[in-house]
Length: 442
Image (cartoon, rainbow, N blue to C red; front, top):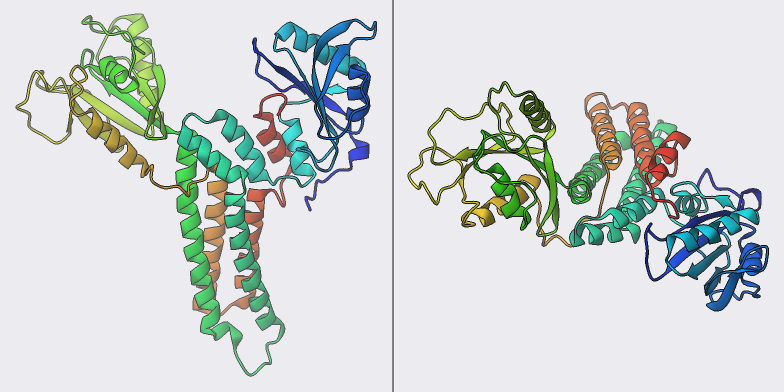
């Protein structure tokens, strides 16, 4: 049971447009809370039966028809939020939806905050925190593989792994604390190999989960790759070749690219954010200097840098002092006699692009064949790492000092860290930060 669980009868009834802005065939107004049924029946002039689609005319206070459509009632707790929920499904014009929402609010509902429906689902124990976050990840998915990973998290795969780790921790804590509570027993439980073996098994499980969560974070966030190099090395042409369309302007005039051009591409399900940057050189042009400064900043923040070198020009090349850099020789269709390490490509003919895409996947340690990846966030990785470190410290306390009390304390810290992932114990400011990133109506 969530520590922040609230009663249905002590909260407002909230309402929001649940469909995206703009024109569409259908627009949905969602209500949740103790007055949802009452407001739905007043708007539709219908006696609503749970989980039944009723055709209705939605009227304002003057009995004028605002719209026509369907109204569906979901009785709590068997609803998304765990409260009474009503959905008004009308036409998808923004003016119509706005008029209908204003009437709902006039009758007593409150405009929902961003993510408030999902927040209530969490607070009412319909989903845990990782599942709530997976809803936003599913909506924001940049690739089909990312969407599948988010759905796995939404279905509870990540939560189940964390809960399995918690079960191992709790069992281990019980065993250690029993040994501490009964020090006069003839058997020294702390010296028993069973505890060490259990801790090592827990470490292995944590390592596997951290590896999967790391892949899930890449799948959610994508890889940030910067294309950098001297002017006219073919950086913009390479971006266009990878994107499959003209995302950047290509010209023989040096210094054409003055700003950072970003394009997200899908490499076998891996979202890759490619940033094309201004050519690196000394320049007296004020605008170009700003572009070069932005290029340097993008390089400093990149997950990886593709240093593009014109294969037809001798060095020296651009100064890019980063460990996470791959040399890529472009225009090899014009020059094939090259010395030095690096990938060989031609943005013009497409030569070497397949190898470059594979290289980018290898940088992320990504495999499209991995059907067990779930989406994860940076905070999840931080919590898992904290749990791993606490278990490691506890094991050292046991090995070096046979200190059962210190081991028990470290295991407790590991448990607290894991509980933060699913929201068993979460600070209000963390919840506010998470749900504020959701869209309105979700």
